[in-house]
Amino acid sequence: MIYNDLLKREAEGKPIQVGVSGAGWIGSGFVRQVAQMKGMVVRVLADSDTKAAFKTFIESGVPQENILETDAPDPAMDGLNIGKNIVTSSYSLASQLEAVDIVVDVTPSPAVGAETAYSCIQNGKDIVMVNIEADVTVGRILKKQADQAGVLYTVSSGDEPGCLMELYDFAKSLGYEVIAIGKGKNNPLNPTATPDDVAQSARLVDKDPFTIASYVDGTKTMFEMTCAANATGCTPMQRGMTGPEADLDTVSEIFAMKSDGGITEFPGAVDFVQGSAMAGGVFVTVRVDDERIREDLQYLKVGKGKYFTFFRPYHLWFLEAPISVARAHLYQQATLVPLDRPVADSMAVAKRDLHIGEHLDDIGGFTFHGIIERADIARELDALPVGLAPNAKINRSIKAGEIITWDDVLLDEDQIVVKLRREQDKF
Image (cartoon, rainbow, N blue to C red; front, side, top):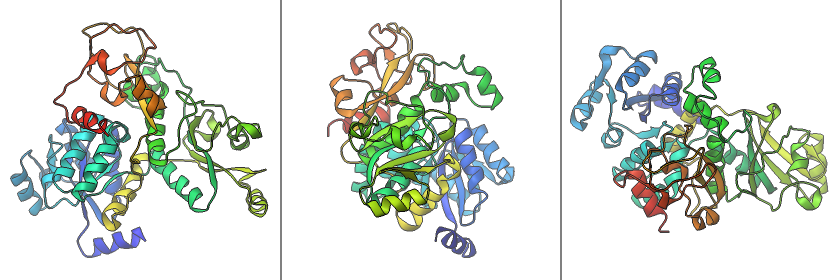
């Protein structure tokens, strides 16, 4: 039991020493959550904005005089040895520190996530990714390198892919035939949404408009379901998925096989549903042939007929992620990892006309959005992975709605994320 093992670590004065990349909304929330727990403590916090990292530590209860800022390993280790917490602008520092047991990337940046994970693997440190954007972009090569180095690479639970993986494993372990997996989308899909379009709603929830726009334009959903697809082998039925309106009374019928009146073309589809009833949750729809099991599932109000949907009505994102960190360190158990072969990818698509010489902005911005496609088709199209799009320079005029290709952009070839993706695409 994780709780008992964490209590034991606390009682022995040996809490899990955690290094974290990211002190933004997600990272600061993760740190605050760990501060509530027994047997685990964040000791190193990296962010390019070190003031944000200081603020996060202080608001989680660390006295300011107990925080040391440094990017150098030796002073950092000296500080840790006398009980200091370390703030750094270096995303590779935590992986170099013997006192740190495990590192967690809690940023939304594919580039930062790749840098953090790669450094951990090179330094023999286990890595947990709350950052699914990085996993979708380069997770397969990171997993391969981690295996070769004898360290653990895993995506955390909390975000939809990790929660969905747990539900998928539950259904598969019981022997049910999985027909479709997916999530409930929180807001209507508008692929051309920009930060300006969502500025007012972003202010109401005190969030970055780019973050909110990435939800509305679907990029976040496409990342999430690509991550889940590549961990389970489930594939989208069409580019962008179908995204029907559904609730718990209709979802099983909707995702029944076409031969039974539903929309699903093959067993093992990945999709999402729209509408408030299932928003924020994840689901797995199964087909059951055994009549006795059908009767029992119907009695237990899971569905009716021969299709049933298991539904988890919430995901707690970075607030749940520490459980995956504990599981990874205590038991060397992964929550979600990509399969050896990809089945899906998220492609970059122009939101507006793009012109030679301009740079793409960030995820959820004004210039591009992401869309899921089968991996073989994305490769045939030479589609640019959306995780590589931020700050890419356009070298060919592109019309709104066009898929952006590798040849359409100039990338920073010195970036670790670019190097890893090029290596990943060789196998």
